[in-house]
Image: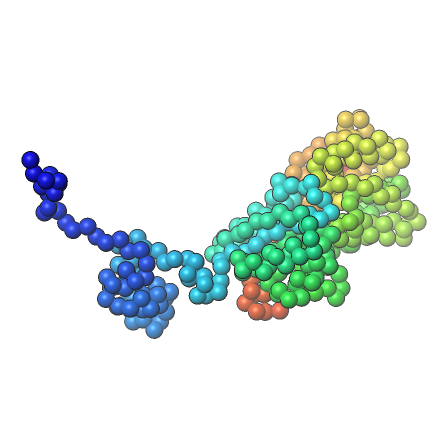
Amino acid sequence: MGDFDDCIGNDGPAPVARVRNLVDLARLAGVSPGTVSRALAGNPLVNVQTREKIEAIARAHDFRPNQMASRLRTKRTGLIGVVIPLGHERRQHVSDPFFMTMLGQLADLITENGYDILLSRVIPESPDWLARIVDSGMLDGVLLIGQSDQFDIIEQTAARYPPLVAWGHYRPGQIHCVVGMDNVAGGQRAATHLIARGARRLAFLGDVRAPEIAARHAGFAATAATAGLTVELLPTHLAADEMEADITHHAGLIDGQYDGVFAASDMIAMRTLRALADRAIAVPARVAIIGFDDLPLASQTVPRLTTVRQDIAPGAATMVQTLFKRMAGAETPSTIMQPTLIVRDSA
């Protein structure tokens, strides 16, 4: 009996050595590892013939440069952090329709620009939560979806970490860069519309611990005061389970006491529509309701929801464009967009 080699034969082609790193590829190409690195990076110092030869060998061996090593050399990670801080509303989930709408827009834009995203839902337990994120060395920049009740912490971090942009409310003189709506103007538009259609007993549903919502309430109340009216604040959580309990309670108060309701978000407004329908309270005949956001679902409710639109798609695009400029070292101002009242059946 022959040995093992006799069984398989010795006249086949010699196995091709696996190209595991730049050194292996350089040996095959007959150049230095540094030349290979420069060629694969598209460095013009490498002549065209040599670069094409190296690229052809790399393709033939299905060789891909080590991304971590490349990132260490360029001091870029290729990652953008998208952070949702939930200091004031710890039970709110990423699956919230507003978060999902904004996140979808941001993710598309970031990946189309050649970056990956690292998503973090943060329950702030200590004042250095944002510092730990930006100092991790994992990210080239950070986008915040909302400020929650963490305004001061965001300010402290932004003072030393420029590539940070937040979706939220702008306060004159603040340090951190914001893209968002004029929330005060949104509240003013809601109040003006309700008053113009005859509402005199006004209520606001929302959690004013968040700067954006506090500003919506402030604009709504100020416009009502100008007309000689007062606004009742009915505290309402943004987390779905707590929101439902709050609105179930509020629905018993609304009928007979209020004829105009401004909800801090479309989700609050839509749940209020449902709670009032369960009580056979006609909207808008007995109570007119206005939401805030103009989520895709707003036009599908019964009755269709009147709401203050904040343009999420252009806002997300501005956030990403602004962040990339700041990553490149440019100083960029905050961008405050004007809201639009979208009048539908509920008011």
